[in-house]
Length: 375
Ligand code: PMP
Ligand code: GLN
Image (cartoon, rainbow, N blue to C red; front, side, top):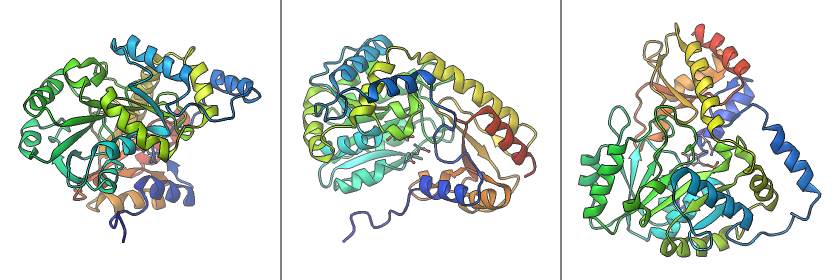
């Protein structure tokens, strides 16, 4: 019997494969198509001949853990104990899966905001939990009345994602205050905060759970170097959680992967000494402006993108097709790939919205713009 009877190939695989088949410009799956930093390549070349090819300690390479702790201190003024509160994971995906499986027991309810990244719900289902989908507001901000009224005695976890994939929404101070009020009333509920786009926020600086003393003791934070260092294929991420939760997470992690790719951990650890994360947001802000410029004077309506490297557009002026069919038409007939946003909703809500990824070379974005103008 299948544990995930309704799961098929992820939309990211489907759209990237179609893009390859029709040689379309791939603005679907979220990954950069520009070269990685020369400095990162140089460190990789230098380190490859060193003794970095065997297992690292289970929780992560100690120097990498120390550097993540330093980043967390510098960025968020939180002092993290690397022995008890931190874990290097094989991308945020494995971190999220492991955290959910450590916390959620059979029958527990997990609040997932709708629309949401696609890996949360299957991870809850494998753990035997019950996903409870709660719609975001029309502007994609969280609706705390709806969240509060979805809480039952079985609610174990709330999953939040900020900056948000697919919408690019970032939470305001007030949103965190409202979450804190709810959790004061329900002290047994945990939070899983997916912050993989923590360095890509445009509207205002990203507010991390790391800066919220009232939430830290009940929260697990997931991040990913794939997003912040432009190396999605390296699959290195990390979790930060209080000791009592991390203890349980590590028990599962050690039998799921034991330890993460040693080469990638060593290289990232050295590279963190030279990288400037401020440049990441600056670079993507320019790319966002360039892509939005391409969309001007097209029939696609630009929606706000406050963070991440995604841009939503509404195409209702162009077609009455549902978003999945329209996204396929764009690939096959116009040579441009996107992600239909309905797949991020529990009930496949079709609002005629597509997601484009602008983590691409300027040349690619301009070429894509030329195609979008003809539609
Ligand atoms: N969370 C969100 C919101 C994402 O967009 C992604 C995809 N990059 C992940 C988690 C997974 O990250 P990773 O590639 O590090 O597994
Ligand atoms: N996070 C990436 C996106 O949203 C995709 C990751 C994946 O392919 N699983 O496009």
